[in-house]
Length: 640
Image (cartoon, rainbow, N blue to C red; front, side):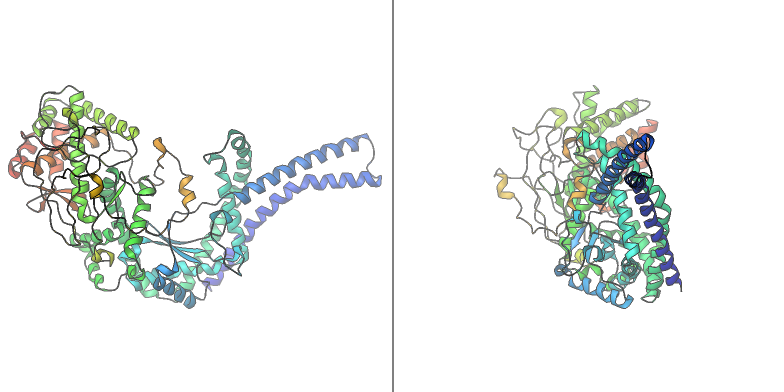
């Protein structure tokens, strides 16, 4: 009864939406109807005279103008491309088990089977209509395009964290929505609302000439009036569809779905933490982690160790993960990871020398260590520009002496903020330079070496199977002289130095210096192309920033303040000194991101001591910590 009530309510509101369209057509046809009456009256001699002749001319001209305007609005609505979520399409040949599971689920629910499956780098699942001709999807033979079922979009973290039975239970209400979607009235109302929504954004699309943009403004105003008229009914229609789908899905895995919903919330928390704490620092360094979905398993496993509320969740890892339903989970993970970088950070659509993938095995070396040394080099470069002890070497003592003798670090924070902004506008996101010898680098006027590309190891089979990935920590690098390169400068993006090939469970490795051979000899072998990302045009219509790079559609964090940037740079300088003089190592914490390991253990108390130095000009807490760890602040560190 609940299902019938929800479906009937959805149909009633769908008819209300269609009535808005009918009223708009009636209003557009009204002047033409008056003109027909006046012309018919004049032809039969009933409406004769100079006054009626003038009325016929005025109404006829008005009818033509209104019909032309209505035709223009209808053409814009019909041709406007509805918004479509960028996803990674999964062909049936690459995931036959997943398709069979969805088909079996649709058969048990007695609803149409979704026309396709796609993945999105988000913790959500929904049905998406992709029948519009502008979307470029081929029509199903023998089926009208408007009758094609929607595409099932699944959040990629669900496939790696959830087990097969849990995923089936969670997808049941979503797949059940294909039943109401097949109703003619609901489908027509949805197409009308999507057309209105797409027509509103036509005037703001990039690439329009001024004349077309000016003509699109009044069309947008008319469309907004129609949207306001049907907004409430469209929302109630979707609620009715959801209620009907939920009621129908209660007959399939209802008890398991209640338990699986806990995993949905847990996956969302782990995914958000992984993106903001782990992936974002790598993206800023011109590297994109190629196994984000496998990383969320490790992040949630670490959460279960720290949080007693999450205890027992890791016992599920012995069951079959849902990513086993894919033929090539590693390639799919790589494609969704690249899409996540483009959506949340605005990176390029394809990898390159300045936008290269990084495996979790190389994350401490390729991201953490290079991030610290890049920020330390920027800090000393800013101190040079401020005239702070120009002849001093790149030491931690120089930074501490400056901050302890000034009441506030506002001037240094503002200078760092300006330097970061200047670097961001001067070049697109790119890889940073490799470490240099102690006391050298951009601040000393030396040029950085140009190393060869980084060789990516084989994917971790445990991570691809939904088990936590093994992430080694980087051993401290031995300082040594770095070769000079005539064409490299402090402002040029430099490729990282190649590290040794690491296996799936390789331990800590040191960083040998590259030999004098050409870079081509060390170039990585080409990797198989990941599955294609669907709907490339939607990202092409996004806002574009300096240099032609797409701005992030969904920024993860607001811009950092000057105080936060200063704290990050001072912390990076402390970590560089600890690595170079105290035998510490860069590491990866799945929940907190880059971390410093001293004796294989984290030191979370460093942040408060750095803030004491910055905000209170009190270096004693930090000096005490340095003495305990064995860091020598007077020693120069290697910079980028």
